[in-house]
Length: 255
Image (cartoon, rainbow, N blue to C red):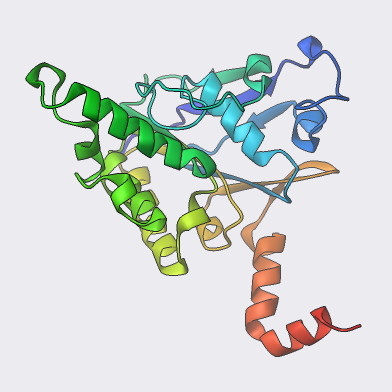
C-alpha cells in the first residue's frame, strides 16, 4: 500500500479575495478558511445546509482538474455553469514523493444524472469505432446508468469505475443509497484506501462518517473544527433517536 496524501492541504489565497460579503466568500467555510489539511486516506467535511461544504469540495475538485458537474478528468461536458469561482482562489498543496494519482473521480450527487447523460451521448457518437477503445459505460459495469435505479448507478460507480491508487472527491455520495448500500460503499472505500487511494468527502451520513481514523471537519458559523466521530451532531442525534424513537418523537412534537 502506498502511503502519504495526493493532496496534503488546501489554502485560501485570502489576499486576493475581493471581499467576504458576497457569495461564495460569504459562506462560513470560506470566511473561516486559511489552511485545511487532509488525511492521507479519508477526510470528511460536515455541517448544516448552507455552511459551504459542497461548495468547498466542488472548488477543490475543479482546482484539481475535474469537471465541475462531476466525472473523471477526461470527461468534458457542460450542462449548466452553476459552480462558483472559489477554485480560482485556492492553492492546493500536493503530496511529495507520491507522483500523480493513477485514477481520479469527482462525484457530485446532484449532477450525477448529467454525467450519465454525457456518457450516453459520447458512447452513441463514437459508436463501435475500434480506434476509440471500448464504450465508456464498460468502465461502469456495462449497464447504462439511466437503465438502473439512482442508487444502483451510484453503486456501479463505486464497484466498477473507481479502480484504486486514485484521488476521489465525493459530494454527498449517500444521497441515493439505502443504509445497506452505504455499508457496501464503506467497504469499497476501505478496499480502495488499501489500494493507495485518498478520499475527500462532504456528507451527512453517520454511517459513512464511522470510517476508522478518518479526519472529520465540522463547518459552522463559528468556523472549522476537527471533531471526533462520537462528538458529531450526526452521531449524537442519530444515536439519541435510535435509542428511543418514541421519547425522541414525543419531545419533537410537543407543543
